[in-house]
Image (cartoon, rainbow, N blue to C red; front, top):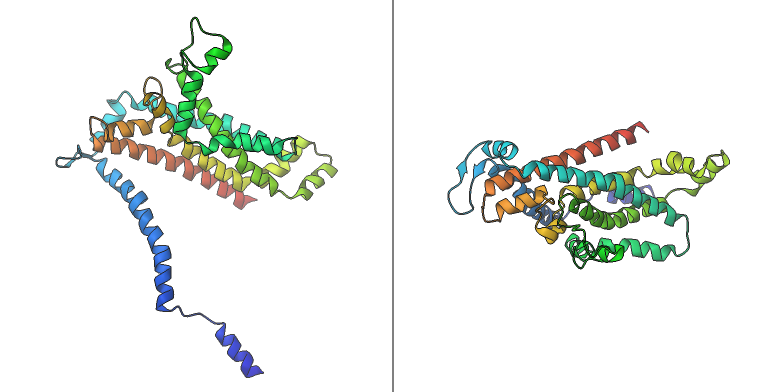
Length: 304
């Protein structure tokens, strides 16, 4: 028996992979890595390099150093309004749409009547692309035939919700928040379902109110969901493009950095180097927000 046991122990030791196993692992792991390098990191590094050049996509590439960035910050009037709109987008989704999605998740989690119907209805906009949401926004906020002016009875002197640069950014933010709220609601609802009910019962026994129970017991346990929601909010805010492009091609008060990238790279100007500089700025801002948020969340998790 000891001899048999020793043989069994030896068989359970380090497994040696055959050539076939290594080939399968190489294909399963290598192809996704190659695709990621080719589709994501390759164009990213190419944009970084091209941002220091002047190129129209056809002629010779001319190295210009940081001239594109200097022109971007000093001689390109559309840049700073677009940057402000992106930050406004981030603030609105982060401070309005995300808390509202959390509120809806809490209400549905409490088991209100017809919760399944509410959940499906509120999640429905998520399956729509932002371009489709932009077309819906045109149907609602159009000056002459829009549903909003018809509902409020403003027919003699209708408000141009999408043509007025002081109003259209807020109307588009409402449309984007309509979609973002459902996404956030589903994420938080999944997190709330995983909360241990004994924690709530213990807090109730200690005399905590529902609000105290949520903010001091339930919400801290949602930290992993908070990280996901925070990162998604930043990404959705800074990569917004199709909804404003569907409305008015991102002009007249709806300028965004992503629209400026498209206009310069594939527009009539074909300033690929200059457009790449805008893309690098957008990438840097995105990575800065995401990295800062993740570091703070990981430090908070370590201190617990």
